[in-house]
Length: 364
Image 1 (cartoon, rainbow, N blue to C red):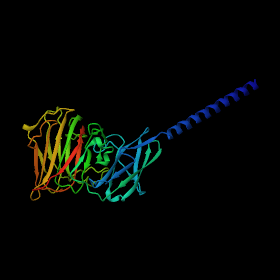
Image 2 (image 1 turned 30 degrees about the vertical axis):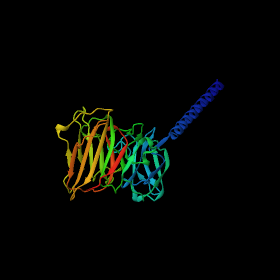
Image 3 (image 1 turned 180 degrees about the vertical axis):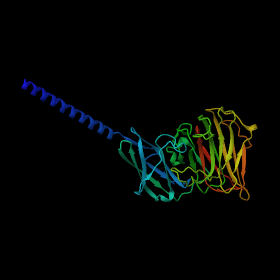
């Protein structure tokens, strides 16, 4: 009987030992699996990016992309040329960062060295895994953007070769330049701080849009726009910076919920010490437009006597004769930005911009 009890005790001990070892192995395997969960940092416009080859359209450069991990990204930061790491905001922030994990590294040009610059991303996920990724920035600060200027999208391989993306995930399609994310101000910049009086011509096709409503992300506006005399986002306490003014003016073709009261407005944003400039088409000139139909879009900025600037905009169906008159003309009498680049903007709309032609306006 004692031998039988002893055998049972030995068997029970082996079973307990087996369970302990099995559970321990499983725990270690789970822990190891968790530690091996991948973190990805996708840089949308390539791991080697060039800025300044044809000029610099704003006071900063932007490196855009998305970070993700199965357990969620706990933090993302970057180090420029081996300097101390700077934390990044991850989207969505209901403004410039559209999707979960989106980021926008906005770097002041004064912090870049001529030639090669290194940028390291440092990511940590919610399981305390760490990941680093290096990219290269090639920077030239001696070129001035030519004017006149044109872009034929079918001849372009990389957007950054002919323009600078400020915000958003853009792609080149057979029809032109298309924003893949429909959100707050998706922006592409052309030109530089030598551009003063010029006319921008392109085409635009509206594919879809978020109907304007109170609050984010539309803030009561959905539009496609051409902006003039953009110096770059101004300094504020946010990352990325959110203060889009001062600016010459933005000419926005606004879409309404039923696409039956669409119209232009031109304005320049808040100016603490000067009257705000604002112009909008009257109700009698509201119109209907069609989705997936191509339209011509044109915007002009020209200096007048004194401290005044005239902004003009028009939109008409592709293939039809261009109207002689502008749809909307506004004169700003207290101009506070006299030079700057042009912007193509999609605000809460999915659009395709066609080829771009910019001509210089010569004053008589």
